Image 1 (cartoon, rainbow, N blue to C red):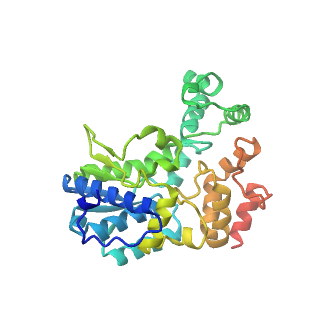
Image 2 (tube, rainbow, N blue to C red):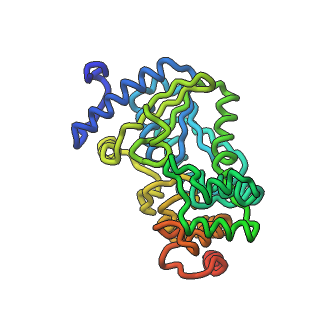
Image 3 (cartoon, rainbow, N blue to C red):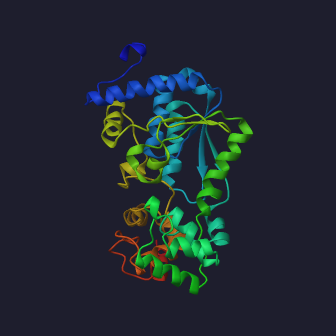
Length: 327
């Protein structure tokens, strides 16, 4: 297998043999897919996975960089650390990262409703609140039992509260703020390969939806996930050996993932809010204003094992926002 990659590729000394095997396998596939496509979109989130992809492309396949469109989607709520990191990536690798915008998260939530619990549960809660029988079925009946999607008794109590108080719920911020701008860009520039940083080891819905790192599409661009088979140990070894520096969200704030800033779907949102409060108080205040009701209600009804608000923040949402304003 190693013979399929030219000797001039400057692979460093990795701590684990598995890392070298994974990197070589990834490079073999990347070379094939990049050779067979003409306009490649590289999603750059400012997160650790996309950092690894940018490094792979720019260090090992500079001949294909001209084919690549490096794209960052600004949702309107972004870490200052992420914005700084994008500038650093451009300078380090000599690339241009196209920053695009869809509807801001704030606009979408104000018009459609708050995201709460998870994307799929927000969808069915929204249907139930608006009086659709399907929403009633999925929230209170068997629903998606076959897919292991069941509302707990506490979540059902939350659903009743939301409906009785006419609180709108929606997951549209995911589509309107992130997916639609990417789809528009893909259509505008005729992208034929969509390259993202998804990994099976992250689990969740993605791990169930995708079965391979490459998906040939009948309509639209093919999809390629170079790091699909990488686990956290391989990624950490690759980072150390290659001398990659992540954004301050990881290196200073101590976050494990960045994702959508302040998203209530994040199971570790309490930890991230604590970091925001310490390092980016203005962003913390904005997230409390936008998502505060979702945090508060999730915790009030004990809807999941992990709290949304940090344990040290034993205040009302109004007091939290006021405290944020002091900074």
